[in-house]
Image (cartoon, rainbow, N blue to C red):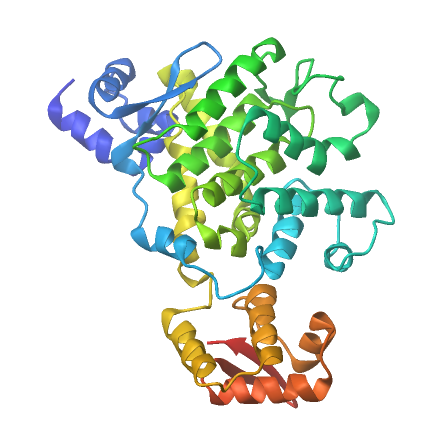
Amino acid sequence: MDAGLFTSMLSDKNILNLKKLSYKYPQADMGEFITLLSNGFYKTLPLKDFHGMNLVYMESTVQVHLSAAKVLLTPQNSSQIYGIKAMENEILSTFAIEQVDTSRESVRRILSGYAPTNETESRIYGMKKGLEFIANPENKISEETIFELYQLTIGAFLPEEDRLLSGEKYRHDSVYIVGNQVEHTGLPWQLLPEYMSSLVNFINQESVMNDLLKAALIHFYIAYLHPWFDGNGRMARLVHLWYLVQQRYSSALFVPLSEYIEKTRRAYYGAYTLTEQNAKISGVIDVTPFLVYFIENVYHKLATALPSTATTTHTFQVALEQGNITEKEHSLWNFVLSAYGSNQFSTKQLEKDFGNAAYATIRGFVLKFEKLGLLQTTKYGNRVKYQII
């Protein structure tokens, strides 16, 4: 292939869509183009496709800004192991992605400790237990703990026909993902133990791959294999988060990953589809489109996800060391960080959500923290909302 033609194709915006690329360059031999990519641009991954060939990605195309990692590595000035607001939004969004009806009121009920009253609330309860499970640093990723997470979060709430057989970690029959047509067929069930074992080995081994990209790849691969009859998407997103937690990205539990995905749901599913469509032309599963989706729609959106800046944290620590903050105010601050993040809240809302302080205490807290430069106010007519600076 002519070097100029190859360079033009490689730098074309349609490089992630081989079908469009072939239409734009009808004079090009796509087989030769793929061979050149394989010889110098594809990076091989230690995970197999359904035919036993290694997955690949284009390393030069998937660059994550350092700011994304910094956000997720930033320690949270909160006694909560999991951000309450993040957990609420994570549950709502992960169900919305799969078009499972639920409500914020039901989620808040379960997160407040109430027992489930119906099937929907039972599913919410399962997600709550699952998120708590991955937040526990003692729960390391293995085939056994993935199975435990699945049963805790999803398996216990499935109808009988979708449940796993006794003693089995994965499905015992074929599974198809259907839209207007069959869009994806899961890995033959007989191969699941072998492939899932390889995935767990990959998760736990040292890798030169960027942690954030590796988490997205794990996400892709679980959905690609489709190890269970139901709940594969939820499990893919949970294990994605779990891996980041295991790699000590402490703020991963204060960012609702699925909220970003839900806002770009069409592109999310499109990245899966595009990966498989490209494979029909190239003969190889190149996960670059899925990784690029996560870079552009999730990771690079995180810069404003967390409100607790270095300045805010320093201001709080100075006030604390000077004895200007009471124990109750300290508890309220930790709660605001965890429950509201960068979102606005009112004094009445804080009083109701915190549940262990009189309104006068709440009022005094927000006025004092506003003067300290930790909270800012926004007026809506006669109403006032507060927000962490």
